[in-house]
Image 1: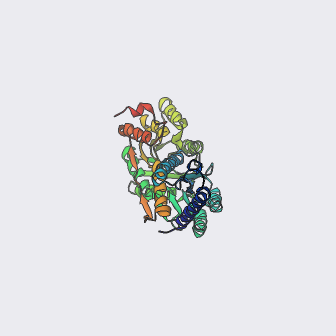
Image 2 (image 1 turned 90 degrees about the vertical axis):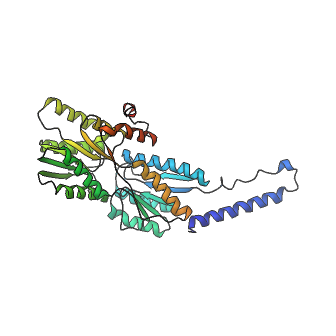
Length: 357
């Protein structure tokens, strides 16, 4: 595909050769040692600049995706002899309106592509369509805007992910009891689909009473507060189905549940959650999270860069949907998963888990 970026690149190459010819003409009668060094055309190429707009810069899942994107950009840029830059334009806290502004800024700044996880598909679809109309290709990851003109989406099947959470939880909780569902932003399309998957699977377990979903701002502190409010209102909750592992990023909830287990007769709920980044693994180790279903958060960035380069630079066909699989993490697989996280560049993968078989 001969695209606008390629046309600009061709123009730059012509300009480089013209400058080289002028330099040669001016210097041909000089002594050999006075001739300026040859111009390195590869080094003078304009970078491919990708705006990366995740949901929240405070969410470790998206920091992992940024790491994957930046590492892949360096490696692929060196291979193609074309600099690739990741322009991090993620809001400090989740805010779809700010994401809309960042897309508009990417258009104004003449960036070459956008890679975005959508906080609210309704708000972002017009902004994505406007960017595409201005010649800026857009790819989504993690949370899609399927009605938009984005060229591709990379992520898990969220409905099936929700079903998987509920299936795992139903295996480990008592035959009867209350199960609470924790979600984050109620407008996030990926989270809505996961909740729908949980409720779909819950219909096969009529002995369980479903509570929620309980929504919250997507920070560890707000998520933990939401859990504890629900626990206070319903002390007989036997399980938590979490469509995102926000409260597991800190040990506040861990300490509270450990104290409950040690000092009271209240039920300590079992947890199954999506996501398994280093801070969350302690919940598995302590037996509070029976299963974590890990998203390949690092690969969101890596695959996103690959597909944008295919679309924008190389003219390769890119499928509209790039499916990704969840990884089941339990006490038996902590070691293998911790080593995978370390291989992806996570320095905080717990050393004690790295030594496990």
